[in-house]
Image 1 (cartoon, rainbow, N blue to C red):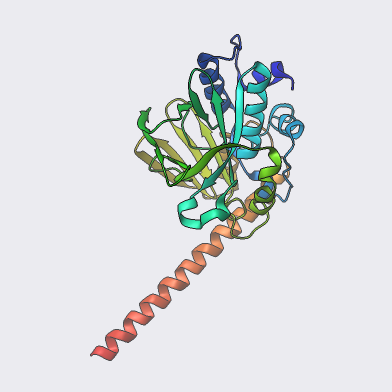
Image 2 (image 1 turned 120 degrees about the horizontal axis):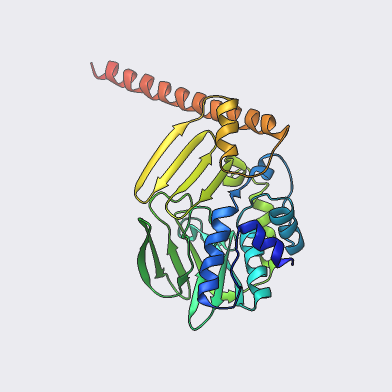
Length: 288
């Protein structure tokens, strides 16, 4: 891995050492300069689990990525610096969907004088690593918690506006192959949120900016503001402020897909509401 190119990509100009200061600085720099996004999945491109491809995509091509790419690249960089890092299988909302969720997220455990959880692949999670211990904490107004679940599971609780509200994980290290089935399913199954939603997140020290389908959000602690995107020009400007790469002709293709999907959902919601009103009206007539 070309560490100098990675450092340039995330605007890190410090002296890297396998210590807590470097870990925190790299974690913040990565999150603030690499967007979390799934636009390639929306455009029908295939994602692969390969460290060389992570570097090519996120560094050379200056794109963003999802958890497997973001944490995959970050862990590779940490290891090259000299950190002891384990990749472990995260399970987003395991309490709701059970063991089918295992390995649908990559989580990193970093060993220093104590063990830290590092995660640059959640999109809207903590800005910094946090100790592997039961605790709740506030970070720039965002409230997080780490607690014990049943057996050997840990459970991370995201802030109240998090897209992924929580994930579980054990401390068992795994290889990239362990995520292979989930990687395929998450970019192909109709029920997958990565198929259903086009999403881009950008983090900074105080806020999270996000574009989910045609809704732009800014989140600062407990405060969330939303704005609906009305047309292609507004979509282009809003998305362009979150990413630092040019989609070219794919922008119009992405807009067409997302806007059609949003319109279809609105139509279905209107039909459902009309049916509910008709049913209520019928019940009222019967009762008269």
